[in-house]
Image (tube, rainbow, N blue to C red; front, side, top):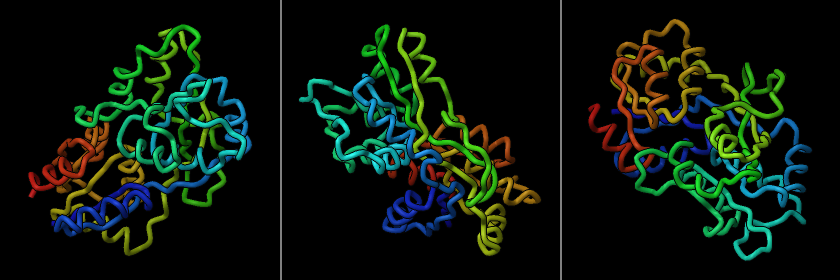
Length: 270
């Protein structure tokens, strides 16, 4: 059984290697491209004002990597022993690992329990809600989508795009939210052989691994004539499952985004 991993290239290769080591025929077919921040000066300015925030919420590992890539030498540190104790909020282990690579101390990081049923904003809020009091200031670091293939020049929203559920909870608790864009997402141009592989995988029993609804949208846009009614998908959230079904996938299995859970789900579709 072939497994197609659709995460951005740098993340897809890690999942592919792990699945191959476990005995799967896994291949990367990245359906989301990642570009640097459209306005680096906004990121530098956010770093310079970091001490004015109580916490920074990172929506993904890419948000972490690109935010810290532009960290000024004199920027404040996420350090539990500093006079200003800035928290880092993340929704799951991937972003946690990215923070550790950036030398953020574990004592400064809040995330859902590793045994949580789901890694998302709702689970994170259960962990940090007690911290958010009136006046609590949160900087949300996220990406912005741009239309067209890599290299396009479409306008990028300055505050980024994404679910505002977490920001809404902070505001409802009396907190203050600001946004900054640390990276851009775009649909990567599929080469002819990649498009052929995608269409074949829609009919031959391959299992698609999706961790983003955006990846599903990009796949459908890249293969507009393809019928996905015979396609199988393993997805990491209910919202992604809904997107897969709306795209026409007839077999959709939800899974926790851990390697063991994903492999069990893949096996269930064999």
